Length: 610
Image (cartoon, rainbow, N blue to C red):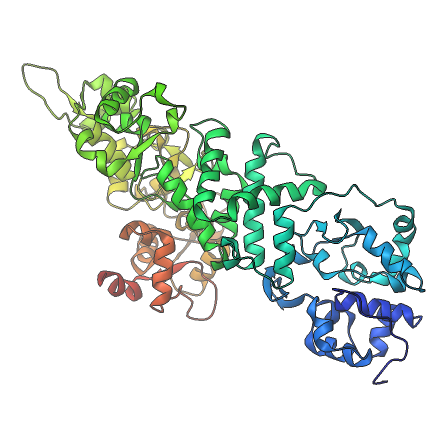
């Protein structure tokens, strides 16, 4: 193999290695794949930015390795890349559609006495998804070609030969536009420059991605969430989010408040209000790089939404109420919201409705108002009590017979009276750690329906919840009070100890424990938790299942992360960090993945010391 090639085009401005290698091959009259193979290189490894191959390419072409590597993405594994000193996901740098500036490409061809496939080159910054404008010509980046195979996608010389007629004819030209502040900032960051704004403290792609998510939410009023934003208008989304985010947390909170006031109905939840901004930060973007953005959104919601036990905030249960609205306070004290608002206005906790347009969004500190609310008359008649807590009359009578919801006052000279606040507090306690359920399916049922189906009294089901026997509790997010409390009928039936219900399948066991089926099967088959073999009454075949004793043994030895968080009154995120800091890892004695379960023997001592 020759150490130096004599026929080499000039390395282009901001040109990635794969573009240069493809042009060198065309310059020497061979295909890119043949050229790299003949030179002892791999085009795939050049695309991936492999240091050894890029260094050898630099030697062959008499270029510096630093210049070759400068604008070349480097693949790190697990869909992670490093580009311009920044770490980013493949979605940020490896889209199947390659974009570029047709004016730059036309200048490449017109400025050299070379065929188009040898003269025109890609710029590395064009690969970065948040870049939407050529800052030199103020021309939007436009789709040049699309290919699913990365060797075809990045065979630049071949692709340039195909699109050259469109480049020269002006077919791909679009109207120019002035650069937004986001365009200027992203260009400067890629050049290694910082302007001193708040966003500069973060890794580039997470910061740009947050601007995109915030901007898309801000655009919801003009462009509904269900409509995909046109690629040519993507810059508007980045720009809108940047205008609020670059100054820091206070401005971001202002933007979130504006969205909250203007998007949808006041009673809609944060997930519906904030759309992808909420979903992505809560469930997908869980890395440390996004932690401060998550914290800002979470704190805003916690201090502006009247969330309480039984609600879910960004994937974890709410264990304590921080703020009340007039509606949630009225439910707690069992008073008409209109009457309660007047009392709250007089006490200075809320503004009169005519004082502004905040209306239903106005919240007040739950802890500060507790003494005031405690002093309100919350004693109601049986009918009023049932209505306030959404308890059907026949259920109320059964529950009273079972020892629940006894009257607060029951004198001979007056009708019995019930304390609505005490009743609601009892229900909220039952809902602690509940899973949010929007459409009850897959065995989920409210207590009245579960009782009718299984012929069991409602008090028996509530006792199962109180004693911790029922491991899965749900909250129907569109209902209130007693009827919002959901259980799974198969778990209730198992706990009834009926002779014809000897146990549950491995699949049901996985659902009840919050494990994926494969992890539960692995746990049982490896003998880490006991199981029973018996006859399936429907198929007549022998199968493995878990008896009540087996399940009790599992919960005695193991605990899930979410279950432990509810037991200890901690958020699962802070609990996970604490466990990790103390070297407590998920159960995995043989290196297998059994899900987020822990042995109680390892964590009880740690948490008892808190």
